Amino acid sequence: MSTKPSYNELTQEVESLREQLAAAQDTIISLKSAHSRRDFEQERFVSVMQAIPEGAYVVNQGYGIEYVNPVLLREFGPVNGRKCFQYLHNRTEPCLDCKNKEVFAGKSIRKKWYSRKNNKYYVIFDSPLKNAEGVLNKLAFFHDATAVQQATEMLVKNQLLLDGIVNNSTAVICIKDTQGKYLMANTRFNDLFNESGLDIIGKTDFDFFPEYQARLFRASDRKVLMGRQVQQFEENLRHKDRDLVYISIKFPLVNADDSVYAVAKISTDITDRKKLEVDLQASNERLTALINASPDIICLKDGEGRWLQANEANLRLFQISGDDYKGRTDVELAQYNTLYGNVLLASMKSDEDVWHKGQPYEYEEKIPNPNGEDKIFWIIKVPLFYPDGRRKGLVILGHDTTVRRKREQRLRREIVARKQAFEVIRVKSKETEEVNIALRVLLNQQKKAGEEVQQRILIQFEKTVLPYIELLRRCLLDEHGEEYLDILTGHLQAVGAPFIKKLSNPDLGLTKREILVADLVRQGKSTKEIAKLLGLQPRSVEAYRNQIRKKLHLNKKNITLKQYLTSTFISET
Image (tube, rainbow, N blue to C red; front, side):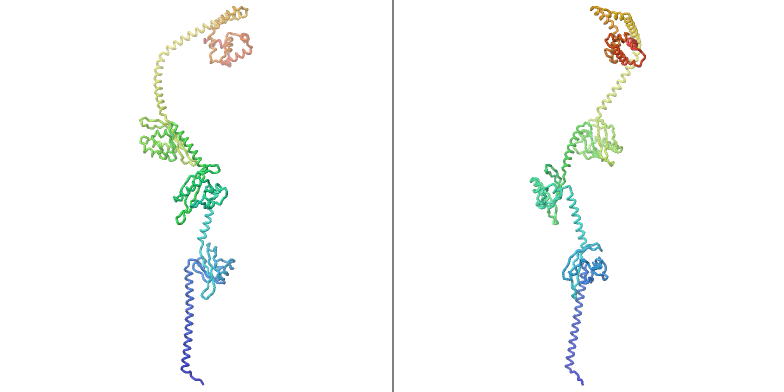
């Protein structure tokens, strides 16, 4: 038989139930609070992962991806249940260089990775991470280092390019700090000045150059450092028994805080160019002296018509002084000199005509003179062209023909006056011509009569006197007889002197022996007789006779030498 619990027992039981209920409620509240904290932490983690600008994901120890933030999703797309090696590397197995074991052992890893998927470079930071339940995962951050990598590669490329240019340049290139110590020098510097092969870094100019030269270099460096701007220096250097000339460009190198930390120098060897400049200057001086010594005007213009060079005769003519004319056109020069303005403008027009024709052109030009009397010049213009046909220059030469033209004018006037005088004389001569004709007829008649008389006398002598003289010479005569015969022969020869005189004419070109032979032929002597009289061989006499015929132009004439001498020379005596 059961008994009812007492009130106290019921009260105790109710109190116990109430305590159990309270405990159960506390437990429920604790569980709810734990879940709330876990959810809060989860939400905060997700918020942080979504807020960071870099890619991030969480991987468990089985390579499963627990979480991927939006940045990584944009780069590689949704996970779709793939493992990390599948998602990021398109591999079917874990990567050979995977560091998950080290990370899950509590070690943080930093590594570089290139993604072929999106052609980017990343720096990945892997570190262990426990979740709210205490499970160990791996948290990885993906920092996009593509720009840095590309900049680094470009920097390396540019550095290599710069090194290639600097070390293959024919110029001497170097950098020195503010104390004058070398920070860098190119190959050209070492080849020329660092013969001992020293390590140039930290050395100064005093280690490579004579002291006086090093001091000059140091002084110009200080000038650049103080001025803080690019400056140019011409530096003379004695090296290996040669005098070298360099043109050096020096400029300061500045830090980000605008402080100067070094001076750079680029030096170009201009020794040969300097020598050419000296030679060219000497040549120009000789050319200038030459053209200035010329009395003719000489001017050289460029392809645009600007005056480049004019000699003193040209400058005096146009009353130009100094070098102000150089670089000016005819139009510009005409503005400064009204006297020659029209001449200069006309010259510009003729220049264009010469350029258009493309060949030398000559013409006469009048140029005014301050004294009011124009000068006359014979102008020659010669255009010069580049190989491609562009205008190169114009050479203008002018010769003063004023005096010659005046002389020509005087000569023309004299010719006219002489023609007029000659006309007067011709009229007067015509009046006396008839009288002269009559006189010449009378003189010719008298001359002919005299020649006939003289011919008859000579023929008479030849027939009546000469034969006896020959016979007489064959006789034995005493000394007085020989003398008388010589006197007689002399007188007879005087009668024939006109003939000898004719034969002695220089135009005939007869020698003395040829004249003697011709005289004997005229007298009718045979070759043998002439040979005997002159003590010659007969063939020598024949040679003389042939030579006489040749000189008298008788070789092609049908006439004997005796006939010609008798008829021609006697009739003209």
